[in-house]
Image 1: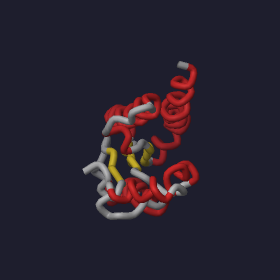
Image 2: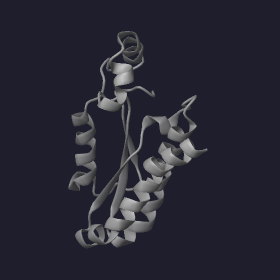
Image 3: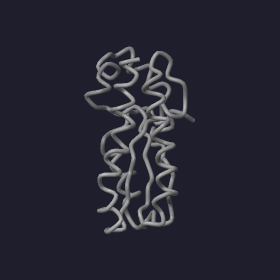
Image 4: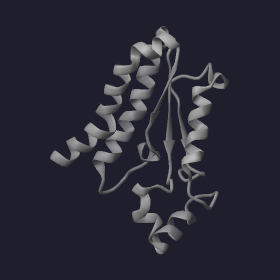
Length: 145
């Protein structure tokens, strides 16, 4: 339970803490808040229930804050990355056999990049998404299709 609590604290409670800390600035700027979840929110993650619960919670938080804060002029949306080549995913990407297996499950046959995630976040922060709230865009190269 200690490990579970720690992961939920980091991956979910910290999101709410940051959101509430910046609510006033977002309201004054009529800004956009983008919450980062994971594709893990949309499927089982055997052996890692805390990660799954926290990322699923982030998707719910996105919807709930979007509805609550719309009247303040704040647009809340999210992104759910799939497998992105970062330090945190080296356990998979640095192992040729694991990497090959992962790539076979991704229709685009490549890992995501931080730039891929930034593109989705920039769209959600821009006026191009001015009528979108409460949505979490899956950015995964088709992994969870």
